[in-house]
Length: 229
Ligand SMILES: CC(C)(COP(=O)(O)OP(=O)(O)OC[C@H]1O[C@@H](n2cnc3c(N)ncnc32)[C@H](O)[C@@H]1OP(=O)(O)O)[C@@H](O)C(=O)NCCC(=O)NCCS
Image 1 (spheres, rainbow, N blue to C red):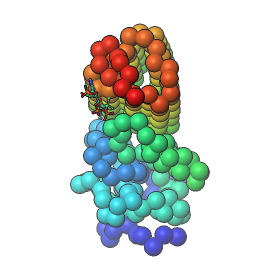
Image 2: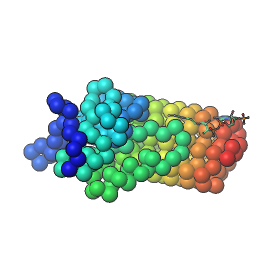
Image 3: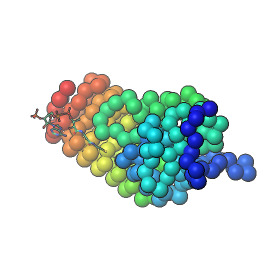
């Protein structure tokens, strides 16, 4: 057991009350994106148990720091579900690694949808994914695990985001477009209908993708998209 204990008076409660479902959420990562996640969860009436962060004591106002990663190995950890709340400003393995660490411990992921977001009937959202304020996931869209559909992003009908993707604020993934796992669509970027993006591809802010960008791990910017690296 970790030597790190929740601070005295921490509002940590078991969600497994009277045999009910485990619903209270522990956020993993206590930075700026965590604050946005909290706003989403609160809007949806979800209970936040606290925050895990490798930085001692780091948690946004309004919640508590529970401990570092070692907290996931405590008995208390089984009473909660988890959401990776580390932000992502460009493509990188960090969010996926945290997600895997949660799964490896046999713990469960939450999904979260803001009260102001729209997820159409027939759309699907994977475990660990958050759909933030004003975002739209339209009919038949499929969002993988551990994704961020950020503020006011639009994922149109039939579009697909693989696991660990991030559609940044105001980005538009048009109908039937496909985004490979680990990729990020920058703020305000637009994928034209049916375009396909490889894995771990970075589409820069404001980029307009007019054709398939299938080379994994590449970075693109501009309108139309040009390859930066
Ligand atoms: C595309 C991006 C990843 C490139 O980052 P980078 O590899 O560090 O690139 P640099 O900043 O060194 O810029 C390289 C060149 O591309 C240009 N460039 C960078 N980003 C650009 C963009 N979004 N659109 C157009 N041109 C861009 C730069 O002006 C520079 O041009 P130059 O060589 O003529 O001077 C980054 O600029 C970006 O757009 N990130 C998205 C951020 C975002 O949406 N965050 C959401 C947070 S929730």
